Image 1 (cartoon, rainbow, N blue to C red):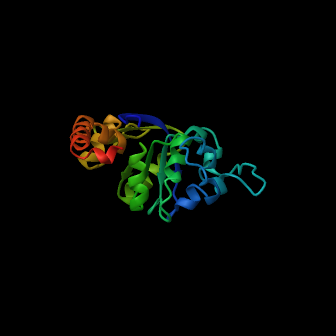
Image 2 (cartoon, rainbow, N blue to C red):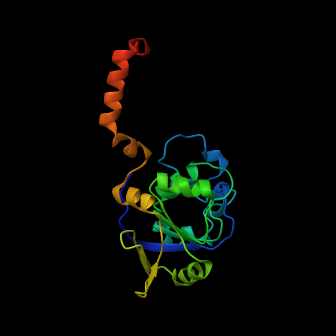
Length: 200
């Protein structure tokens, strides 16, 4: 997982309430187990019409939001089914940070497991950031826990220390497990000596 320290980029606002994982990643794209290649499918039904032609009115089809790295969303973002393909699609699109008043729990956890920072702020602050998301760049600093807005003003946010540590150091569940590789190998060696039939 890539480290997340400071992210600077254009923020796109999709201020809809209850955007579910089917809206983020429709069911027809769930056949793959690869984490790459799903960026084109993110928000598919909103981005394309029935003929697979881009809808020009949708923000991610407009410049400079085609390369957005920061998404500003509405309440209960990521609700619905627990498909991990939703954060995979956002990440493959290029989004590394989602800012919203609230998130669905499973989606929230899946984002952190895949290197996407979820920032929870009061609705009034999210609304203020939405008003400033006009194509200018924002900076999200995980070390200082601050968002620097296009006009230079700053918004502080909170994040529990474990998630912050893991994101800053690029540690997913596999990397956290591998931190204990010496203990794992020692256990396996002892077990193989004591219970060799398990290894036949």
